[in-house]
Length: 254
Image 1 (cartoon, one colour):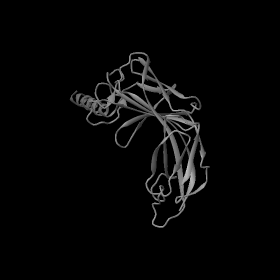
Image 2 (image 1 turned 45 degrees about the vertical axis):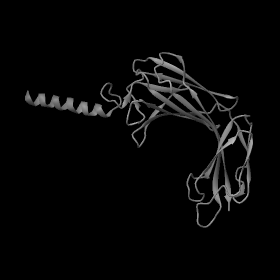
Image 3 (image 1 turned 90 degrees about the vertical axis):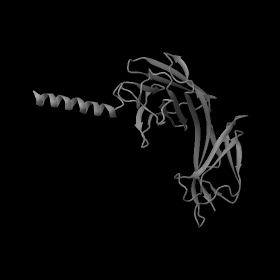
Image 4 (image 1 turned 30 degrees about the vertical axis):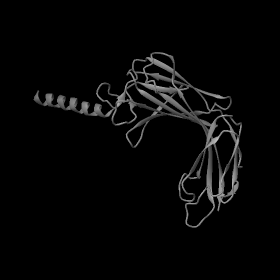
């Protein structure tokens, strides 16, 4: 009898230890978030490249000193445009929820998405995301062009947007700082054309050489998560950041 009681106590202890490490253990681990909680801060990052639409969603408590993004508790889920997000744990200990779908936001001024949150009691809250980040195409330079760093060159895109801005980033094609020096990032009037000044791109090598480079243009907009149905419990600062971007590779010559 004593041995049986010891085994039972050991099993209970092991169960408690295991539960403390699993976000699925409701009520035992403050590192998991229940969607029924009031005031969770949800941030969605959505980008469109003309082929794929990718989403990363972070969930935080504002009073959490650790500042880590949390995992959801058991049976809770997030879906974007009908696709259930996959939970990924980062090396930092934060969690992020990801989806990847075909990019269907290829025309019009407004980009729209639906965010659906479901808790472990099957209660749902649906939010809409609506921002202005319309699609466009890069018209200059041409892909594969050779552009001397010592000369100005034109960046162009269509259609333009009067009164708006567009972000341009140029860096090594492999995202490094070996051939080119640190990337340049420019916030430009969204007028359909701009120039990169002579010498603005710099080499990261002692001996200048041609560099494979990437130009990326991005239209970025931020919008609220607007409640559509269900009991909305999210913090009022919950937001979505939507980026529509295009890129091309070229050769940056000395």
